[in-house]
Length: 311
Image (tube, one colour):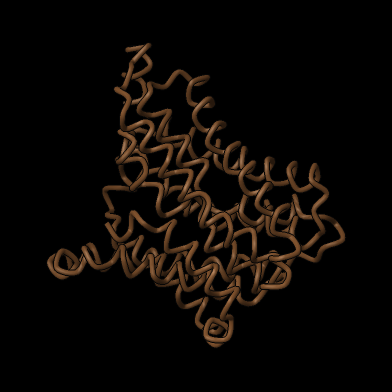
């Protein structure tokens, strides 16, 4: 129940960070360890079988990852230019578009009657691909006038994403009994960690948030909507059934925005971290609403042959 109220907690933390920034500013040095811990908890939820499943069912997994890294970076770049965002804000938008899929997507897909096993496979492969795709796509789409430390981004993703996820998988593989005893506590702890990252980012760029708020919010809402629609209708065009299309929608539209916020602050500016923080709040709101909407509607299979291919 606590984790399902994440959007409410995120809004309260955002307001608190604006009104009382000092406590959050003191926590700025722990943003990177917090993100690494979040990725570790994701790794603990994965098994070697989740990765081997990709080989047994490659078509929808590759479609999800392909749509993710095609739709979201292009959408971020287009929206930033269409709205005339300043370079720092545009860079943050593009970072959000170039990171892997969000850690909350699996829960939303379960609630929306999507394909949870497929979601886990897409999340796992998206995270691995992102090690290389995020720095390369960021350099490709960020304005030529903005310096991009691609090698630094790559190193940070290795230390903050790849190694913690790998460590989590190893712990889950070698210490399954221990993991079973503590796994119920991991999602709330990870949620608190994300909330602290949001609070720190907002506190560090409070005045800029007040100035860029309406423009940034519009950009984030459009970006998320394009991702959700692109994933769903991309799945339709590829002939997948309704369950897979719902899964692709949420996997494409929900980003690892905490990673985007952290990278934005580390390698660009506090303003570049804001899109990640705002997206982290909004995609959980929109994802929850969409999951509730779909949960009330039965799945319809229009093309049984396509369903067999997807499986």
